[in-house]
Length: 303
Image (spheres, rainbow, N blue to C red):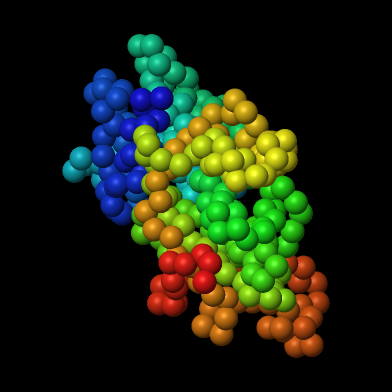
């Protein structure tokens, strides 16, 4: 846990184009956290003739020459380009660089990097596809706020709905991140920002913290507001956060929350974006990224 925590903190604070040695494993079998171009990850020095280039989903095991502590080295890297998954990715990185007793684990990887990769490949895929704790916390924050304001609301985790949170007058799509600087959100499909009433996008930036909000604490708060505990637990189970799951107790603090009205000032792709409201032939789904920079927002979930 100490090693993964150090990696996670370095991911959050290391600036682009830099590397820093990981203290937890000492100098005998050194490894570095590296952030470069559009990726971040960990790596250690290997023989110059080793060539690896394996990729699965948003993660990659590969070799590349980089300047490390002033010297050009061939580095075996485990990297990702998905900032929102760096919490989960840090655990995989810690297993990758942990040298083990007398360096035995490092030797196994050096002997056959692809063997290590194949063992982790399915887990990499599962961790990337699963719902993240802070994403659930973001939705629960909005749900709790509406309930506190005496507004009847449906949360998609508890009842199937088109948007994350739905009320009689307004729907909400909640986008959460642990990136300190990124202001981009992913829209998953041409229908996610379709609306037949008011629609808002809530953008919440989180930071891991020893004291903060968790799925566990918010579930208790929401139950106190009158939602049946069995319904809450059923919804959290569907999301993969049944009682006893570690992610349920991870705590985050809110750095900022922005609320955007999906109106003429907010860029969207919907069916109205196409001739006769129909996607081009053979196009089934469109996913896209919106840069929120410069788009008007407020801090009020309920106006």
